[in-house]
Length: 109
Image (cartoon, rainbow, N blue to C red; front, side, top):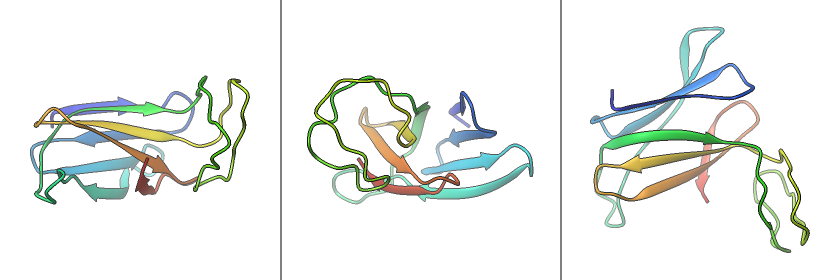
């Protein structure tokens, strides 16, 4: 285990480590509910070092619509439109996953 993060509101935590897998855990059921293999730009597995949930955002989304929750705006406003999970890899890259409503790891942002 290299990284652990607790969600600010939901009963989730996320872990990442040398096994190249990021996992989302449901704290109520004490079970891993979703997982994804971390890869680099060359599609080689890479270990993780740190993980962080990102939910409430205060940044301009622009006119592009979020592919997960279909939220889009040109205004800068604090919103809770969908969760994201940022994962720092052992190679120094940061991978950001969009998350579904029940914690599934979707496409990289």
